[in-house]
Image (cartoon, rainbow, N blue to C red; front, side, top):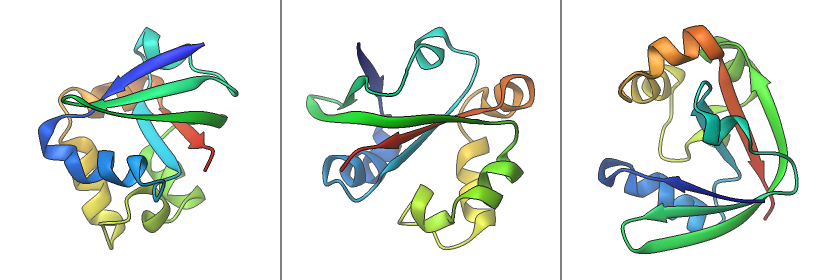
Length: 114
């Protein structure tokens, strides 16, 4: 199955890292049907304006909280441009509605093929 995930303008660095295959993990808050349907082996079209990067999903992992995510993965694996857990946490919770969705549904971790 092919899925499309969009990046906002302020997240250009994250899109570039995925397009350049420097970022192998994409994290989304659970609770949205389009994220919940993503499975191992699926293809994702990451979109940033008119730019598109296509990657395959190597695996999908669910974690219940942001703390659990940060225990399992390093900040460098999640966002190469960030250096601390606090900076990563601040960035994640600034997404509209993310804190509430994480509390209710947890996080969906997409491991991407190279």
